Amino acid sequence: MLIRRAPDIRSSEITDQRVYLDRRSFLFGMAALALAPSGLASASAPAGEPLMAKRNERFTVDESATTYESVTTYNNFYEFGPSKDDPSRLAHLLKPRPWTILIDGHVARPKRYDIDDLMKLAPLEERVYRLRCVEGWSMVIPWIGYPLASLITRVRPTGNARFVEFTTLLDHAQFPGQRTGVFSFSSLDWPYVEGLRMDEALNPLTLLTFGLYGRVLPNQNGAPVRVVVPWKYGFKSAKSIVRIRFVSEQPKTTWEKAAPREYGFYSNVNPEVDHPRWSQATERRIGEFRRRKTLMFNGYADQVAALYAGMDLKKHY
Amino acid sequence: MVKGVVWAVALLPLTELLYRLFTDRLGANPISYATNLLGDTTLWLLLASLAMTPLRMLFGIAWQMSLRRLLGLFAFFYACLHFLVWVVVDHFFEWQELIADVVKRPYITVGMLALTLLTPLAATSTAGAIKRLGAKNWRRLHRLVYVIGVLGVLHYLWLAKKGVSDPFIYAGVLALLLGIRLWDWARRAVRRTQRGSPRADRLRAIARFPSGGSALPVSESPGTPSGP
Image (cartoon, rainbow over all chains, first blue to last red; front, side, top):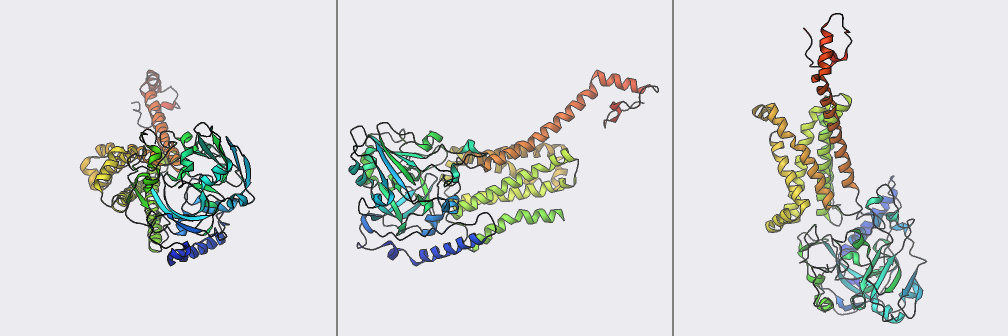
């Protein structure tokens, strides 16, 4: 988290030209897909409206960003399907407007926000975070949003609010992955529920996110609003959120319910605690050839290690 | 002719991989793409080679039996490529990591075991090897392919994440192919039992009498010692 660049630089200026060329070739690719005589057609271009925000250098890593094409075509978003290309292929089914987010539970001021009002609640900023997937790959992404803490302080949680629970939209017309079919035995328990401890949710790193790469969030990345919790495995960062509830008990999260031995409530990035089926010591940064060593708390130990002081992270994985 | 088709189809995944490699179309995670494509192809070819005998059992056709070896060797070829991508491209000869994975990760253990067991089968696939081993020993050795099939499918079942249905499809196909063999074996065992049973002996004894029913089914089964 070193300040290496002057402020005011927008992502479009630092991103190398190849990314932008890639983006175009991606659009051409999508056009070709749409013309293809298969059922795959109609993948809409993800190019959203521009969403400009000043970069916050305090929350920017000095590593080159993953290409826009990779960020928007290599996704885990089970609501669309389990394959990496399902989200971008089926993204057009999701309608991110109109959209409301219910804030309730143990808060003094419960409220249903319209997405456009929620976006204006605090000044948007751009932050370049690492994203580490539990599967062993990682990216660097310029997100746009504001700290979740800005929203939390506004709705005034009561003393009973010890955890924050995020719920993703439940609608199998927009999310075909939520349909139960022949293979329903292997699908997740919908809707997707994620959660954070109150102090994790209030940590300045936790970003309520509306955009990436200078644009509104593409549907496959969790439009219209998601959280980004960069020191935890990617699945902890709930997408396409419709409800944020303040609760006193630790939420039962979706992946924890699906495989409690493999996906704990905390799921902090930790090279020393293996997934039961594979090592978490290294990762492949998308776009790179050699594996990298995975960093404790995904490189954010300075900001978050104190949250877990005294906790056995092998037990609270 | 049929072998030519097998060659063409079996080389298709490799062609696709090379085409994508040279045209930069391997996607965001090329190594993962290559590993998955090669692994998938290995399993399909392995199951295809295991499907030849059940076809004979079910339909009494035999022309496809000569394809077993080719399919099995292609399965071995893709398994080797799958393994090499893992060692060379994915982990770049980090032997410590690799060996730790083989020991600690059950899905890698069974995958490694499957490839290890497949190697002697590939090595003894020639006519000369059959002669040297003797047909009986050779057949016994090559029964390992059932174990390899199970290990290969387990390898995928244990590594796949929730919601991915492919490994269950492989498991279903494998269960079907082994099930047909089991059914065929049981069918023949029943026939053998009847042949040796007192009832069969009695029938045979009756059949010896010239006045006896010549249409008794016992004389129809092949290999039954016929009366004098």
